[in-house]
Image (cartoon, rainbow, N blue to C red; front, side, top):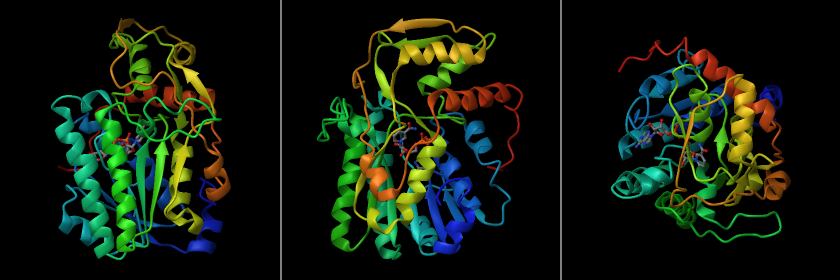
Length: 338
Ligand SMILES: NC(=O)c1ccc[n+]([C@@H]2O[C@H](COP(=O)([O-])OP(=O)(O)OC[C@H]3O[C@@H](n4cnc5c(N)ncnc54)[C@H](O)[C@@H]3O)[C@@H](O)[C@H]2O)c1
């Protein structure tokens, strides 16, 4: 019902609600907006086009929804007034806006991590209460676990090992606190998301770009043996939509992971195979805040949200590979005015 082919079932059950997506021009937010429109929702998307990474990429992310009568872009930072104006017309708020990235959260970077992950989340929650929205879905992260999410058998307690992880955990805890003001919030802990439009700082994006003629060198951080649970973006979107509408998901927290934990070295080989070219690599020391392994426990998402990941790594990386190929010839278009 929440997947790409679930439109008629979704509409029978939920009609055509108006919803808000914060961080809509980002990697995951743009895919989410597309799915919601496809399911029959009217989407108010908010983004301040944070120049932390290439703005052309962010603008291009919206090409498939911009101009759709059921999509409205609010090209502005989420202050209280902007949030209330959008949320006042929305039944569900999908809160994805933030400053992701573990490495940039050290040092002075933490100023932006706290502003965009902690303070912004509090503002979104406050405006959601005032606007009487029925549910907020908060995009949290596997980073809240630090080094703890290592196997299916162990239920880890959150114990971040990076400032970014701390900022996302504070966001979750704020969400928890706002239950006292009568707000329903669902926290989703995304595990390393990949697919078309992946952020340029993320490993797979950097790998694919480095396979191009004259592409940048791929700087491998650490020995490549670190294992990650990679999650394809359309699966993340299905879990996120379900979290907004399944009644039993209220006030719950879910791991959202792709189903298998794979080493960076294995991903590098796969990327080279798919791209049909090798990458130029350099190796630096393993950075602080980088866990050796991440494993998602997705039973709860399966039982409560009815969600299971559908796209395996080979298929998903193939889709991402195609996006990187086309990117060469489509870097120019900028269709949204500043
Ligand atoms: N990509 C992943 O693997 C991953 C994993 C775990 C959690 N997350 C979380 O999911 C969310 C989306 O991640 P992403 O990879 O799509 O990141 P992204 O950087 O591509 O998207 C975030 C968007 O939020 C916008 N934004 C930031 N501050 C804003 C503000 N004050 N007002 C309006 N817009 C603002 C940015 O301009 C950006 O377009 C983030 O909250 C991130 O922490 C992502």
